[in-house]
Image (tube, rainbow, N blue to C red; front, side):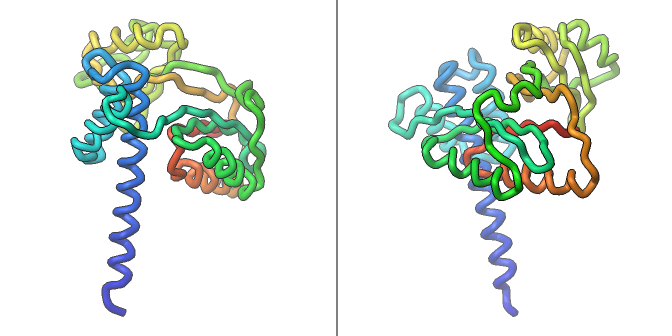
Amino acid sequence: MGKGWKNTIKAANAAKKGAAFTKAAKEIQVAAKLGGGNPEFNARLRMAIDAAKKLSCPNDTIERAIKKGTGGLDGQIIEEITYEGYGPHGVGVIIETQTDNKNRTAPEVRLLFKSHEGSMGESGSVAWMFDRVGLIEGAKDGQFDPEEEAIEAEANEVEKTEEGYSFFTSVEVLESARKALVARGWKITTCELSYKPKNITELTPEQLNHVHEFLNEVDEHDDTHRVYATIKS
């Protein structure tokens, strides 16, 4: 039998790490393009760099991505494109992508929907199933009342997560809410526009497994940045 299977696992792990680095670099490039290359004055870039470092992304990869975003290095232009559609069992799905070739990405995303008995729709086809919100994720040391923290930050909702808390705000107060939470001792890991489902699609456990398979495949696509669906997260 030999060590062939071990080499296969190593190759698969290396490929996953490489894909994660590529996605992290895309977000850094987009953030630098939109808000400039100084993370002190660009919150999105700062958090993108932090996320990349958590993945052990090499510093030269991070620096190259910033330079590409600010025009300091030649590179392919990364576009942010959103796709919508119905996944298996009528689940509404919004996919945010970061791509250097939309003529490649669009048919590949369409095929992902089709291969799981879903269908990609036009812009707005499922967006009505979601609220556009601000999302802030973070953690805070010590004892506190999360509801009180949400009120002080003018957040509409707060939810416990594995790593801390998620605050949902209106789009308009997203940045002021982030600043308020930072001032109250929160370490913010995410601050971005997001989609929150208005209603959850009722599914059987078997149907939910099918949906999760589909969403995992979508998430693993090289150009996928964020995925939202009308299921419980």
